[in-house]
Length: 222
Ligand SMILES: Cc1cc2nc3c(=O)[nH]c(=O)nc-3n(C[C@H](O)[C@H](O)[C@H](O)COP(=O)(O)O)c2cc1C
Image (cartoon, rainbow, N blue to C red; front, side, top):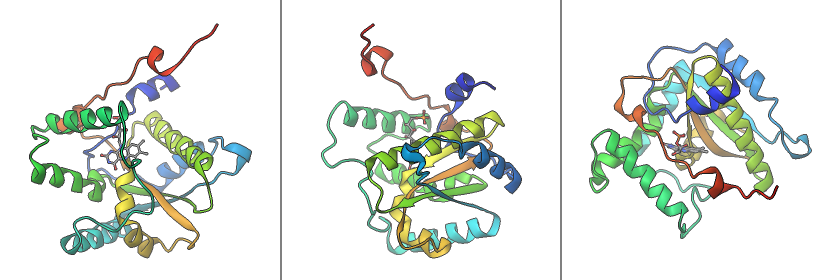
């Protein structure tokens, strides 16, 4: 698979097969992704990779806590800026509508939307759950660099037939996640990411999101 194919076939997978992915395989992906560039070569990321019992213990803990606190723990950062404006808000709404439409849920049907959202905290059935941390002292440039690292993981996964699901939703459970991983206090959780084999029969994986055209996102002065 070349880079163009990896870019074109990477989608957010929201239903995984239970087939396991070995530690060796994830190590090979991370070994490729660690070549991601970062300003000053800071490499301001740290990844925790869980599978098997450590993962199921964490998911069970979150599921338990969710009964008492369905909204999770106050996130440490704004997943979206307050008062998100258009065109961004319109894109966010359309993405949600299209997502729920794949599984026949009306966006107004809050209980079913919430039930679907809660699948984030099962990593959508992925056999591998990853958590991406960065040092709290890092600013917007370094957050962007962490994103480059994450995209590198996602593309490297595609190359070997795997799919991924980046999940900022995990910011809602940063304290519980930290209680399982024991990261240094100066690190904060940015994002989770599920990794595994895509369930091609799952309707939710049929979502193909829109993109603005080249001329909308780029200005050429040749
Ligand atoms: C950093 C990041 C965090 C995301 N967090 C979530 C999430 O918590 N839950 C989810 O279902 N999708 C999440 N997404 C997926 C986006 O909704 C998705 O990337 C976008 O709609 C484009 O669709 P595509 O990835 O299928 O091309 C996230 C994507 C990124 C890049």
